[in-house]
Length: 237
Ligand SMILES: *Cc1c(COP(=O)(O)O)cnc(C)c1O
Image (cartoon, rainbow, N blue to C red; front, side, top):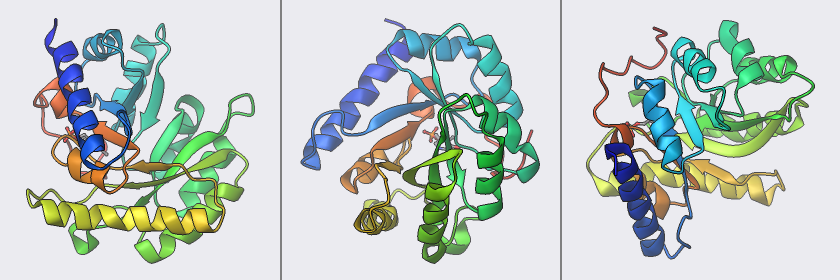
């Protein structure tokens, strides 16, 4: 078995073990493979190992990979920071966007979504780390943004996404992830059509699953240490 196939198997075991600890069924969180900085060949291997959903953060790199892998039936998720002058290719070519954090971006994505495609699946990104993060809607504004996304014809509201600051402290991890969970519950209480909490990465997926994550975004635990450092969020290579 290749290294990536072995890593996919190990990651599924981690997810299932965390689901069991949380009292949730095996496979309770979908595995979104984050291939940023890795070549299309690595994604091909992950697909051969059974994965179908792939996340990318850097637009130019992502579009090259979408082209190189157009022969495979992959579901592409844009998980990077969104700039309003770069929304069109995202609206046209991705199935999901996880980082919607303001109204202007949501409106542009909706307007630019081609009529022949199903609505773009959207998670509203929440800033759960206060000043330690530049990204995400402030928690008190997230529900209003979710209501707007639910109204836009080119978008389909799915739920919330969060990227807490990195910390080895499990209690802090869980407390950060508890916020999106509370917002999802409020959204459900308002009958918003949400079903997704996009949270948890290689280092903290267990805590995220304990707090109700339905989709973990995993890069280095599948593909290895990234060959060049991930750019700071907000910069585009
Ligand atoms: C890079 C990235 C990930 C994956 O991070 P790992 O620590 O490598 O698992 C998940 N989500 C987002 C938004 C990312 O940019």
